[in-house]
Image 1 (cartoon, rainbow, N blue to C red):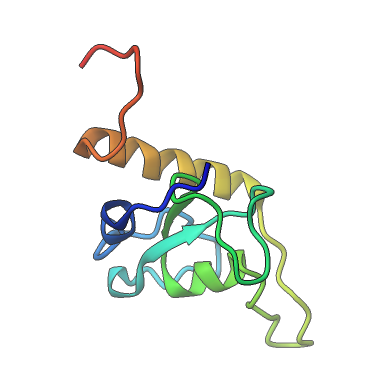
Image 2 (image 1 turned 60 degrees about the horizontal axis):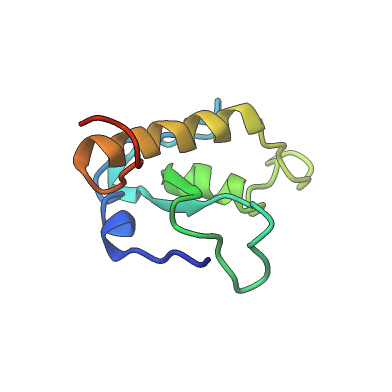
Length: 108
């Protein structure tokens, strides 16, 4: 099921970057957007569901989407997927805390 949520997307505005890729992150909350992670439901011109996403500054978002290049030789910079899993977890914890995402069976 495709989940698109204006509230989840808008929640990224002004947030700190959750990816924080070492040596890449610009740490500027003014550039933060909801960055969708590759999860088998993403392709050219398609985004994954909004719950498979995290808060990312413009620099980290570029790396996640494969747009970041090494300044010395133009090769792609490798993504540390441990950072991506942590960032999605941090973002989802924020959403749960804000009441934007609910988990059934959990006492409030």
